[in-house]
Image (cartoon, rainbow over all chains, first blue to last red):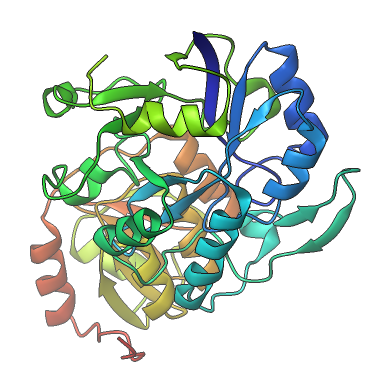
Length: 234
Length: 118
C-alpha cells in the first residue's frame, strides 16, 4: 500500500524554524495536507518529539527522528523505530555538543513544548552547531540502536554530504538519499540510491502535500523503517 | 588596520556593510567549517571563507567580526547581503583565492586569531 510521508519537519525547537511550529500546529497541518507519516527532525535534538507523538495519538504516524550535524557539517537524518531508541541516541549525542550558548536574537528561539503547545523550557546551547562526531561515528551509533540514516538534502550546496565531503562514502550503508525542492546538477552521484523527497519545513505552509508516496506492507513505524532498509531501487 | 585600508590595498569589492568600513581589524582566520569558526573565532577578526549561505552572516554577527571576505569572485545571494546589511556585517569580495588573500593579509601585518583552542 502507498502512504504519503514528509519525514523532515522542524519544530520551534530548531532556532531557524518559526515559533508557531508547535506540536499541535505541525500535526494538524500534516493531517490537513493528507499525510500518513511525518517526522519531526530538529537539529541535534529531539525534545519536542514526544509531545508531537502524543498530540498525533494515532491520527497520524510520527517517526521518531533527529537531524544531526556532524563535525564535517553534514546533515544526517536519523530515524528510529521507537521513542526510547531516539532518546537513548540523544543522551549519547549530548556528550558531543559544543558549549556555544544560543543568541536568540541572531539564531532564533529554541522552545521545548508540551502537548498543549505551552513553552515548558528552552535549550540554552546553540543547536545549530556540529556535534564532535564524524559521519561514520554517527552512522555507527544509529545502527547500534536499530535506526536508519538518510543523508539530508543531498542536492543542496550547503550542509549536504556532497557539498561537504565531495562524494558519498561507499563504505557506509546508505541506501536512501533525501532530496529537497532545490534543483542542482548533482544527479550523477545518485544512480544506485533510493530517493525520498521531504519538505525540510521551517514554516507550517512548507509541509508537503501528498506528493511523496512510499510503498509499505502496512502503516506502522516498523514498515516505514523497513522501506528504508529495503535494497530495491525505486 | 581599518577595513577600509584593507579594501583599498587589496582592491576588494564591498558587497555589504559599506557604512562600517572604519571598523578596526585585529586578526584574521581562514576556514570553511562554520562550527570551527564559531569555536575559534574572536571579535574584530577578518574571516575568509568560500561559504556564502545565510549562517555565514549569523556567525559573523555572533562573533562581532570585523568583516567577511569571499574569495574567487564567488557570488553571494541578495538575501544574504540584505541580512548582512541588517546585522551590520561587512561582506567583501575578491577575485583572488583564499590562499593568496591570506598571504597578502599576513604580509600587511594581520595576525592569526589568538584563541588557539583546537
